[in-house]
Image (cartoon, rainbow, N blue to C red):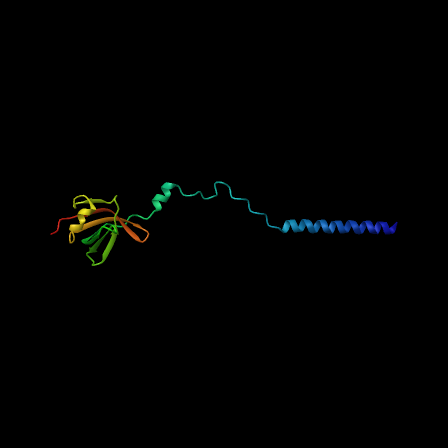
Length: 135
């Protein structure tokens, strides 16, 4: 009987030891962070936010019309600083002072022009070309 009591006491001690180890291990673990709530998640920008973040159109360029390439649909303008800038144009490009069309620019080399444009990748696309009379 003495052996049975010793065996029971050892099993009890072993169970207590295992149980306390388990409890201590659980207590030592850091709690997992709660998943972010819907209000914590960043919402994607709305279309109006994206539009306001878009780069503004560059300032218009004023200079002398140096050449027109109707096949490539480009014009070149020499600025007051002496740099030559090349602009693509489209059927939607508004023209004033040159017979109201880009075709009228072909005979206006040397005229003072103001080009309003937007950058599209590496290209400058003219949205408006204003031609002043040659002086």
